[in-house]
Image (cartoon, rainbow, N blue to C red; front, side):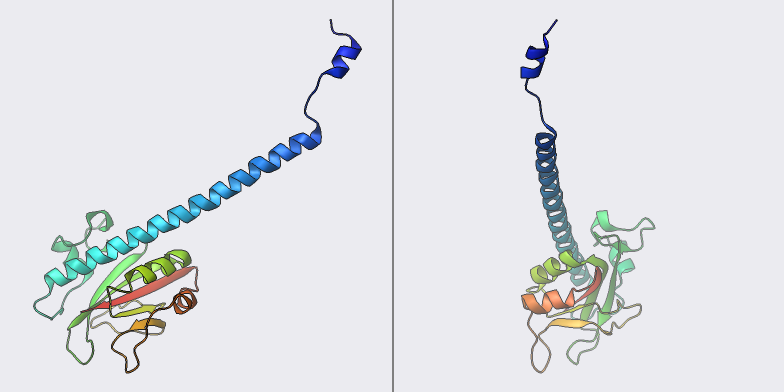
Length: 195
């Protein structure tokens, strides 16, 4: 049996030491959670970019010369030109990596007739919006954020912020400031116009 003196000399954690350990563990957990969230957002933005470029290639493969009349998401899916992992359960539409939809329509570009196409994705989170717009700016002559995704063809841009327009009288080029300003909602829609 231990004497009172031996028991008193044993060292243990004080309440303050225990609280310090808990604070350190919580700080590490918070940092890990934030980094995981940023990594996931980056991966979703990259998946969105790959999906967009894949859909764009599919649309271009279906075009008859510079004429995109009748090209829709359903047509792209039925032709086998949509990324299989993004085809919706009905097999007639395309989902984006954020659970929204991909809308495709022909567009009259720069005075032409159905000589372009619009791909629109909705429900894009703010951080991913910034990333995907910046990373795809070199691939499309016109990009608009928070425009209404077209329900009919030919597609028309309605409301929103144009962050790139190479056809405008004074071309608009994307900058970090105008992209961040445009992607100002928690859930954004983005329209890319290609030719």
